[in-house]
Length: 468
Image (tube, rainbow, N blue to C red; front, top):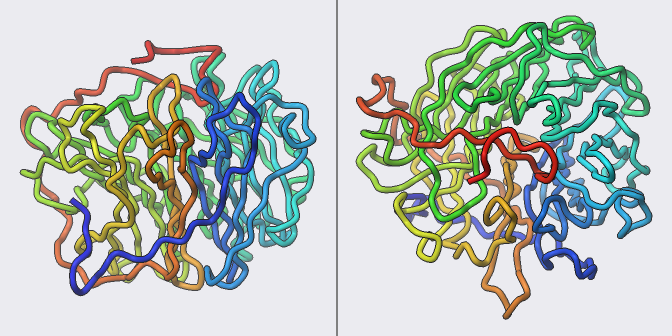
């Protein structure tokens, strides 16, 4: 169970934004699914505003700090939905990246009208955003993610990449490339083996290799694929690891999706929830795998948040690495969600958010410190796939200081929600280690109890698996 200690008290939260939309088709005030990126002294967080029950939101909001998290300015992306000068009915799945070569911030999002399209909004300062550019031309799209090649020694410096999957084709992965700061995008390409899946999270190594960890179509494996030629072609997928995940209780919208980060040497870190170290798969840990080339991966290790005998369940992780550090000196921050009782019911589950840190590349980890909670699930936006804080949350380092972007809910005022995007008033404490990762073998009987399922954020068109 995450919690503060006398030497590591819980940090104070800072509310970044408020949902001010008034359309009667959304759940107000709700902000969900935050992502965050940093470059230099600037941090940009993006999130859904006014979540719809059937999928998507009224708009995408942003919160930007140009002074390493000391102060923040907030706004919304105009020109996307009908609620702010656009043509689309809803928008979701925001992610953000910085293109150093073109000095441009890019927000990718998923908008819906007759089909779901990947869009990109652009900004020179993280505060004033252009109207959206259409990226995807596939029949449908879901779970987009954006990243850029910011290494000045890379042969593909200034290339930016948007990845998504297409539920109309059983989750076929697509990737499009921009070389002009997101103004135009290439015709989308597939992997060499036409891999299918969900939740790809691309990163770019200093040598220009793009690595895309993802969950496969059946939800039974973490996979990855790469490009070494600036996005012209993509490899066949390789297996990172099988997944053994515990079904998260309480009708909380959640799945075993990966999150990724990169150190200064190009080592890729991937985390996801997994129950392999728990007897009979009674709850999830957060596990970590790494790779130096995107094709060969270490066996997953258990991040020691608590004892394997605990009743806590851990899920919805975000991983960040200080980009000025590497190898055995890499500084990592892991933000995650948890229940103290993995066997809770919807009326009794109490959701918390906590974090741990490592100063040695993930070998040893600090004691957990709580960020938010406990939250009752009925404080969260409701969707046809369960209560929602997001399919992901965010964490990023700005000038060697780590900041989270998380959805935090307060008690409802009758039928009015109070769920918003928060960070912290001060950087997350990079505490000393108290425990090492467990490199033991998985426990007997730790098979997944997660029924095969795949869902989509705008979940109304091409379900692949039964929605539970």
